[in-house]
Length: 202
Image 1 (cartoon, rainbow, N blue to C red):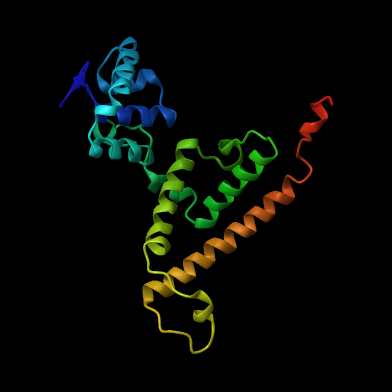
Image 2: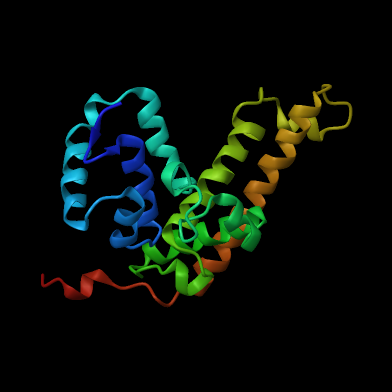
């Protein structure tokens, strides 16, 4: 396996995920067993060689940010934990959809969002929750054969499988929760919108 200063691509991926999650570069370098000035060379090397990585390596890179506590960082006390740690704080789907609606509506009115201040989660933890619930929705809704929801609601509608019934339940729950939190934050930020035309001279 190719290395630079003893750091493999997967080491680099785990290190990057932990830095994004708040671990200091000095601590990351200590885990990797390199001097801090070498980290810039490691970054440059792997960033320049991304195009040549295998599909498995790139899949690992895209997924490691949801669970940075892997490889050399698996048993490091201060390493960023996996999504299981975040779910202990926010176990309900509604929790994440509330955060998502908050981010979207705040952005619409030009407010810089701060997940740590509002919810006590880092950007990495927010992304971990996003990945977890996206996978849940994909499994329960997107990967299940669709059916006519209107016919399902009518008495005597067509028979459906248990998976399709669960699909309908999850899809409806998602829609209801999204509508609830979008309405909540639209109301919260209704007076915060900036009239950009005020800064324009005609």
